Image 1 (cartoon, helix red, strand yellow):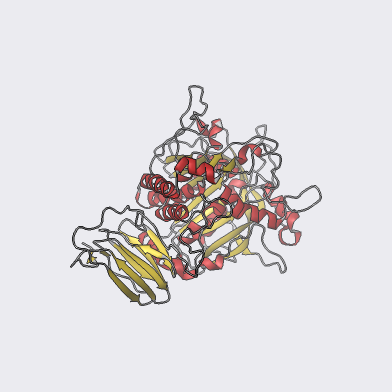
Image 2 (cartoon, helix red, strand yellow):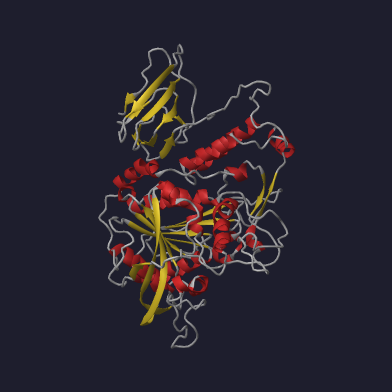
Length: 603
């Protein structure tokens, strides 16, 4: 399982500054058609927010705060889900809450605010999109805002902590004056709540300004599952009225989006979601890309085990019959296949979706089209002899498996969406790959393919490679993880790096021809120093003794290195480095030939 790294505040200063430089448009101003919510900081002594972050935000240089959002909203009639809504009436009061996570240092803000429509399928607000991509979002300097837009979530807030949330309400009649009802969930005010919060963020309105001092360039709407379907209706029927959000990301997944909109949208889908007709019957459009990821459950194991389960168990909303708090996984009993959730990490594709959407909005660079799942004549999904889906984005965790992963399961309740994973034994792995070296080679190849296609980012590709390199999957129980360790002496060998590619994912070729002349250099760079653009004519590897550095190549790929890490340098590629708040010292090994310069100015 890939573990996400945490970084201290200075760790992403350089990368965030580079992104800021690319955002040259004037700050956005909300549309006049949307009246901003009034935002007021929540200050109730002895209480804390529901869904507070479960990761230590301070290690990323981030802070979290909650705000009440209030105003009056319209009700809308949506007769045709692909057409603009008609306002029915207005003046309906509401009061809800939002949660804001942002860089403490405004200079690290990249100009993009991700506004997530909280998912309420479990009966409470859950920040699934944040839970999948929090490491990427904070590494890259985004601000994130979670919006409680629906009655189910608001009512649970009322119950969970009446002192903090007892005054919240989004109630209004669901009756349509022309007959019938206006909304299948009764959330008639949710559309304006989501829009008015966005308008308040842009206009820096209210007694408390959550994003004071931040110049907002883009407002991006995101939602997972039920929230993605709510945002489908918002995109089709409300966005043309509000004209507020510059891009949309759907996580399992968007329904049918209108084809005449020019607002970019990327829908990341799972194996589970692909079985639903509302998702299966639609494809790409001029401003829509659908990225289905094979072998994935509705939420991945890493997302659930590393974030959502920790959050729900801590907050204590799901409970056992005897009143004990349960995680969301514990609240999904009786499934035919266990352990639950696929280990194929959809969140890595979600990270890439954010990056491609940013470029699409910034300069019109359209996100790449993904291979779709193959289907039979009756629309059912095609599978191979092993039961794996054909087509779709195939991450290395599926293409070079260490176990069986599936997006489907069976049993009571929500078992169908949980999927499962069955890890292979060391004997099964040896039968499939023969040895660890072959497994690593196949992971490298599969990783490079999906990286080249644009569906994962260089940082995540390197994490996949490192995870494969350092894995102990082939060891029988009780075996020593390090085969090089001398059992009868005090000698211990720790492999710091083994790679076939540089930090930006570019594969190394052959070493330079000629008489070998290796060079080892100790280099110290002052704090805050920005190196000039340069390249190296040979493979080189920098061990970071102290400090930290962010490196960027000519294509905008970036990666951060801290003390104790090894940086595999690029070859014949223009790049530069930006040092953090302390001087950085490196031991650099250059694998060149006699007389070869160690570096050259970029052309």
